[in-house]
Length: 179
Image (cartoon, rainbow, N blue to C red; front, side, top):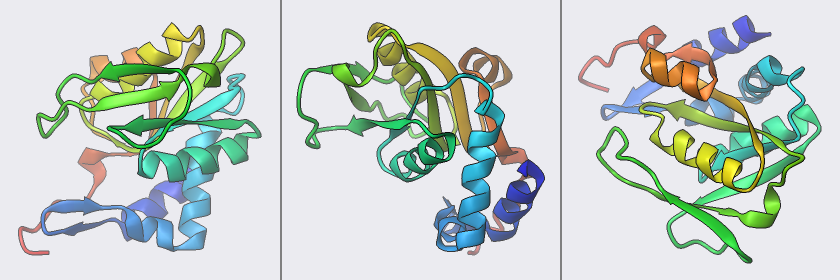
């Protein structure tokens, strides 16, 4: 299952203007289904009760992985988008672009009975995942780990956050400087 997802990610991954483009992976229904199964699979036996995803690609992948695991989805919003009710907020450490994100999660969405998995397309520094973990734990939830399409984190951060991935950034084709 994971090797099929890995093959499809590597086959469909592109660089566009020096930026990683994973959108074509999502456009192909076979690749999307395989990626979702690949993201959910490593956590299938981990008693996950909720999947959270960070706006925007994390919404798409997280919600799909939640359906695959038979659990609910918890949105983590960036910035000022509408998110009713009491919230837990965190300002992330700087990411790979040296940007700090203001992240918000509905306080009532996670409780002490929850074991929460974070799903996203790419993890570079782990700054946003670490902020989400802190919010989940503040709400009383337990951190299950982080499942991503592409992992670019440092080894210590990978272990600390419980990151599992379909591919690592080192496995991706190098940018040719032109596309």
